[in-house]
Image (tube, rainbow, N blue to C red):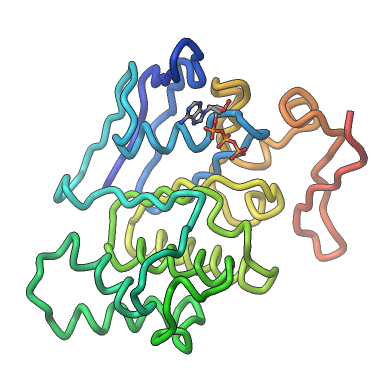
Length: 250
Ligand SMILES: Nc1ncnc2c1ncn2[C@@H]1O[C@H](COP(=O)(O)OP(=O)(O)OP(=O)(O)O)[C@@H](O)[C@H]1O
């Protein structure tokens, strides 16, 4: 099973330190870990450090990796759509980047499966640059899923999606994690999505790790006030499920 942990991870842009001593406890394959925090807290920077595309102090440890070249897939926040490729071609290309250039029937099946699971099979022959923002986001997610990574880093993958697609995309990702043993780290602004789908929550604030643990233990009124500057509480709804109720900004 893959296990990811970090030891005093940091990052700096020029003279500004934007990530400082982030030590994540072991995150295990099969889990969904929501990374939350206000704007500019350092969520994207943390993902870029873990994906090893940004240098900085500290260590990111990965145990139980089969193939280090394809272990981690990273979906950045911005899905620019300049490619003159169809949706099917772009997702196939993403898969072939990690599985060699010889085309196998399994590759076509995996692409088909990812598009169908994300309910974008009907877009297969559309040109990426002609898609809506939400459609592009779903294609970006499909490009990550077909790589079959052991660690999936998703930076606000649902921000442009309608509510049905937010729920379906989150459910798909959580089920894949549980079924395949993939570890998912997902940056989210919708705290109710974190509450509903994440096993653990990491709160980043001002470039440091403010708290880490099960959603119910971390999404406390005190933490939400200190980091998001909101007056909020988690309470069971009429169906008995926990919901975040936001009373006001502080
Ligand atoms: N390429 C860069 N050059 C300079 N500063 C940067 C760069 N990328 C990020 N930063 C700074 O790092 C800090 C953290 O940014 P980051 O994108 O990690 O935050 P975030 O938590 O993902 O924010 P958001 O929720 O708004 O997406 C911000 O102050 C930002 O201005």
